[in-house]
Length: 273
Image (cartoon, rainbow, N blue to C red; front, side):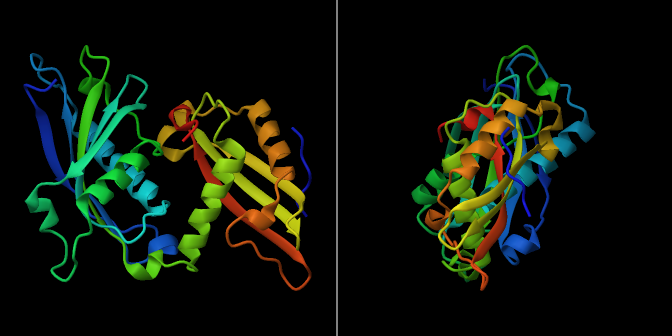
């Protein structure tokens, strides 16, 4: 039983790193989202002294962040290739996001039997998701003396219809994740980066009998996590007041009970989205 709680362009440093990984099988199975290299643009008059291992680690972690963001988003039947440009400040927080159609060489990596969807719609989707992503720490050498740095990431998105259709486990989990974001966290002025895990129990009418919200670090930004007792108390209080009958995919068992779990990422730049 869950207890009730109250509580500038010029000289360009670039390196193509080809890394191919599938998404978490429990979520997407055969879906393919690929980050094809990262490029950063430090100042024009100063060469970038970037450790190769730091670059490799950042590229892999950037891929992981973008993969997860798209995997957990209501993408619809979007397929194609885009280039995402993210501008980061010194805290590795996004301050600008822009997505556009990727060069032909990236689109050509899609299977021959796949027809790309409207590139403007896909670019708009990726651009919106850019703001809802938690990113790894940008290596300090990327900045030199600048206050911001741009990172470009060509991305291929190929999500099979079978994993996007309404009624699938992925569709339901994503919809519930968005529900808890909107109801619990969207308007709260968070000051750290982390993950809220929501465990709930309710009756057949959706009245919450018990709710527990736990805060934990995001693996990519453990240094930016702060265990905020006030935030946790607010989330638990809000959760107890929810009408879960309005949550997508809500259902109860034969005993008239409903219980479940969801995870919601949070970061200062996500507030209000």
